[in-house]
Length: 108
Image (tube, rainbow, N blue to C red; front, top):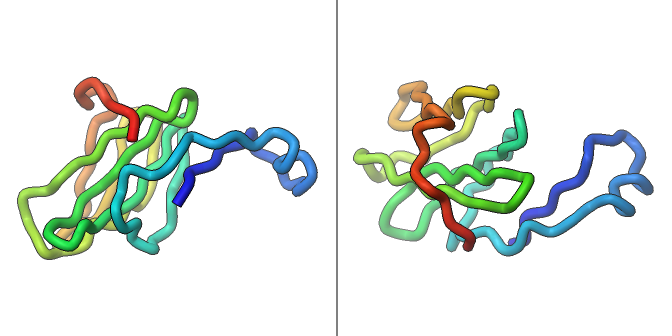
């Protein structure tokens, strides 16, 4: 799966003209939950067959963070993003990650 980004628009032609690829997702299997976007970031759940977690991508440059919760086998579902936090559900709890606390990210 390739992750794409474009400036917000309701016009499909504008999106086609301005879209750009951030490259392939680093997730072996992307979880089919919504992909929330906010403040220049997007989040998705992932499952690699042995663990579940949360992925965060910075849309400006395609830098990824892949977070692994301590509790498995519960699926991780991203809920929303503010300019300060990513909120997600894991093991029937709503949790948050402070964006400023993320370590240096990497590319897929």
